[in-house]
Length: 82
Image (cartoon, rainbow, N blue to C red):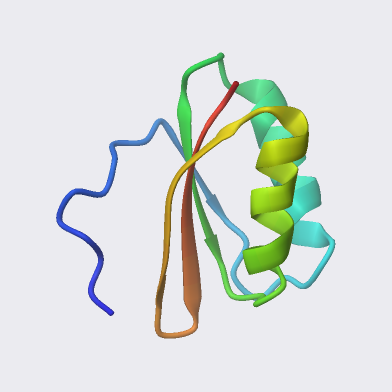
């Protein structure tokens, strides 16, 4: 899949490539604390479990999962801090 042309702008990039559960979500939790409400974090991950874990993280902590897609082995997420 090619990245959508309308991918949102983002304020912070978190690259968790090569890391396995629970590290991507733990790192995301730390980054969320460092950004202001309303800012967008782009997360790049290679662990398939992030497809389950990141949406649940967003729902549980009231952050908005703006967009997500997969390109090859990479899972891309855009999250707006709630």
